[in-house]
Image 1 (spheres, rainbow, N blue to C red):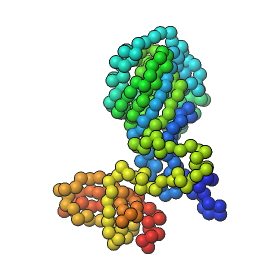
Image 2: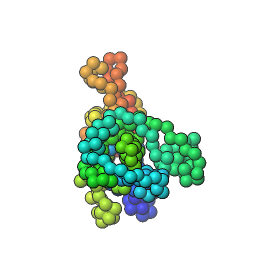
Image 3: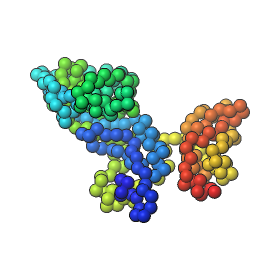
Image 4: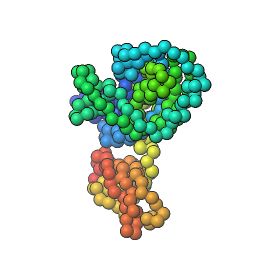
Length: 281
């Protein structure tokens, strides 16, 4: 991405992403360029949706088909039994991440420790499954669609569903369908990027679309861009504390947090865009 979008003879552009994909996975991976990288956490923290297929007849050390088989299972299960089990995996759950993951333990990646044969103890984490839909089932293959909170490992979900059935749960296919509500239709391939890169770019404002929009005057914009807090005209009784995308007209200035003051709501700058500072010098 850096080479593709950097202009010859100019400083290399920064690039980042809005959420790592497993090596096995395909699907949506938001790419952020330039000053948009300041807002990568909006993708990292966003809800995500996946379609996953997993095999109940075996398990591997990595919890997906790229790992070494650790156990095989003989058994069967009906669609009715599987369907009846799924509601138990909706809502807030304690989930143990896979040993083969990028989580850091005492400064080291868990997957690096596992590959060196070190003992890795993964602590459970709170995650939330919003929806869990059975797409198809023909033993041993289960296909589900999942919408979930940040930090959810679909490999762990497959493992835990299989374990509840007394079987395996090895992921064979995984596709991210959405990040933060972006529809699948927004996705482009690497080939499309190379063919028409400019047509694939979206304005930063679209990435911030889930934040409340706050418009301020030109004079207020100059103060905001200097890092000053702004008293807003509305009183603290009719507005709630919230994160906002700050605009002057159609120009995005950055983001801030609106908090209650003594008599008025106050806008606190959080991230200011250098490109906007250039405009309002």
